[in-house]
Image 1 (cartoon, rainbow, N blue to C red):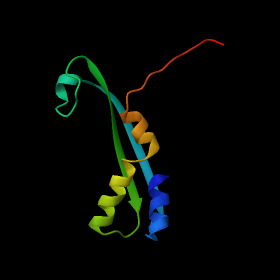
Image 2: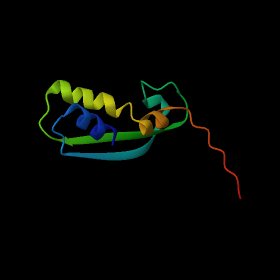
Image 3: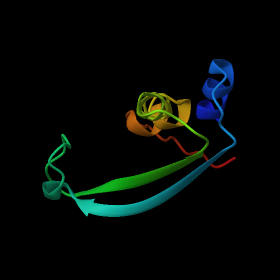
Image 4: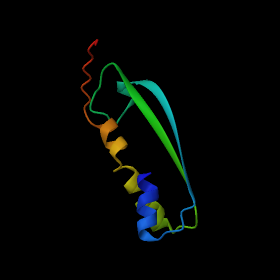
Length: 86
């Protein structure tokens, strides 16, 4: 949704956006870019397909915008879950 809003505001020819996610658990030691080095981590691989004619610069900007969407930022932040039984 964030990509579509951005492209529309810029007047770019975006006709469709498809996002596919794949969740897996990986060993922290197998993740070079991760801070955590022990135990298991959740990994979400994201594949975004955009339909439309874009320059490489526009495609790079769309990827940058995708990484700034509210859901992406939430998932990358520390999450504290509190559960109560009502």
